[in-house]
Image (cartoon, rainbow, N blue to C red; front, top):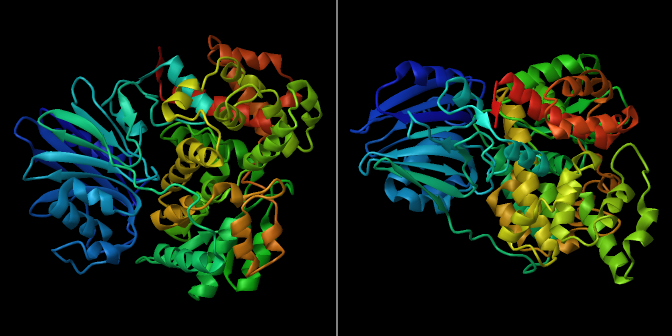
Length: 597
């Protein structure tokens, strides 16, 4: 796992590329280097900061062959399958070398064969062309753009490009609202002017001073073709987990005690007899603490269990450290505990597995249950006014009835509007409800007809991309830690997409299939309710978040709207999320001196 960065300029800029590489060394603290290539009409600068996981002694980057040069961030899986495609064999565990050989051999056609989490820049010496490419789900980030002095810039992160003035530091009110509406910077949003996020499963081809953006034809299957079978899942999941546990350094597991991380732990220890370390973050506040579940599982499997306590008294200090380091705004407040956990875990290991992606692929979110309940209610032809009984707040978290109430007030809207509003909106962000904010996205994605598969696809396209993946990559790579998500391995994704999604959950329970798999090991644990990776923000919200927002950017209408809410709302789960969303965006703009036009 690494950080990559580069640009094209008319003259050689050695000091600049050195500074750029230094600015991403948190992503790869083991080694860093750069290369400047004469293109004839300009110079290509390639920089890499490397976290050594595979091929510890022969993975130095930029990596060069007779035909090409590569800088690479990520991991490839199914390496043996990849080797069979390569004519020039290399005896190494380093996936970068295999990737370079395959790109030398097949050019852009090589992109169809890759399974992994990655982004890279590959320069073809013979054709004098540069390829920028990103993995099938956008697990690893890659930004690209241009400015007056640089016909092409690219980076794993936004911030280094701004700090070194390669791109103009300007955003727009429209981009800010888009970020708030979708819970993060989505791929079509130029949060920084003239800087784009490369779409998943896409590549940029730069040649003769021009670049084109190309989408690889999506060959992923559509659902309802296959019935879930535990034995088949066990075989496939075991193969994937074993592959993700394979490296030249120890790979361990983040264990929350939930369904996904528990499955990873069981398969690692019982199927492969691997005595991995498992890491759990605990809280003093019992409302947020899931330590007991994790502890019981670790003991039953005789795994070394590292329990890390979040120091709530240092909440403000940790948040201040994070917000000044963030390469871009991260609107999910669980970035805070994820950042702290990554920082502490990196003291023990370089790589861990996580359960990211299981919720989207195997029906883990409560809003899927709510849609089933709503479907039943709709059959009775109930009107909005008849659904007032749903306006019940059962807990400080977003209970199922609270969530259903959101739908009850939006009955006349498209199902996709309802889902996106439910995920990303609140009373504070009423503009996204009143102005049909998501209509353009829905029209472009052709989401007019309801289906449960469409619910899943929206979450993969939006929630997974803007929320889950960005949070994991940012929190881990700020601390030189690699997080591998086996559930997002292409083999497992293709299998999950062939299943009938609506059978993954019922009105009573999420993740029905994964729970049945877990029952093989532990019946009690398979019935646990999803708690989520939440955080104790109450004191911070009142003492830091709200005061900052109310004294900053008074010209922004959305911040002025804070005055219409009382402290009781800002101490609720929804209110705390709103405060963090606004704070992460406006504080980041403030720290990075970004102009809003």
